[in-house]
Length: 73
Ligand code: FES
Image (cartoon, rainbow, N blue to C red):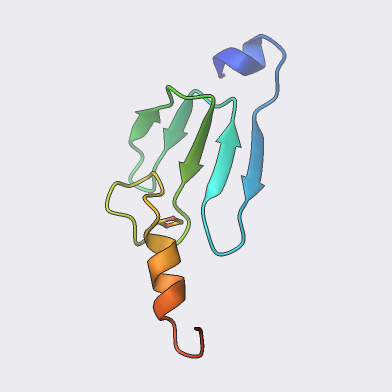
């Protein structure tokens, strides 16, 4: 259980369309390989596009991918 949940503050998640998942109040993120990553910030961005260079965190690559998609300008 997270520290914040133990203190009664819920972890909040918000999906950014075409971008990351923003987590507020989490103390750990477990990636697809089962590795735990400590969260040291109040809010972190978790990559949902799979193209980040520093998984599991969003590094902004999603914006370049979206900009390069056919039919987008
Ligand atoms: S969501 Fe931002 S790099 Fe994947």
